[in-house]
Length: 77
Figure 1 (cartoon, helix red, strand yellow):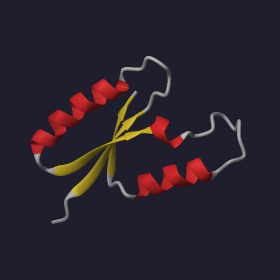
Figure 2 (cartoon, helix red, strand yellow):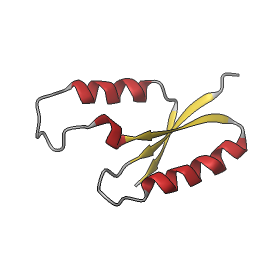
Figure 3 (cartoon, one colour):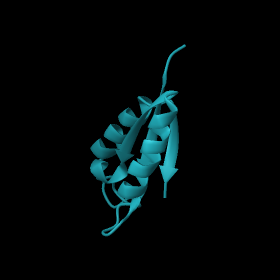
C-alpha cells in the first residue's frame, strides 16, 4: 500500500497569525500516528493574488502544482 501525503495547510497570511504554531502542533500529533507523510504547506509562501488584484498567475500555478503532490488536506484556519 502506498503511503499517503497529507498537507497541513496554513490558511492565514495576516501579520501576527498563530497558524504556524497550531500547524506544528497538529503535525506533531499526526506524525505520531505513523500512517501517512504529513507536511506543512504555508499559503503565505505562495504570494497568491487576493480577489483578482493581479494578473500574475505564476503563484497560482505554483500553488496548484504543490496541491497536486498531496493526497489529502488538513486546513488550519
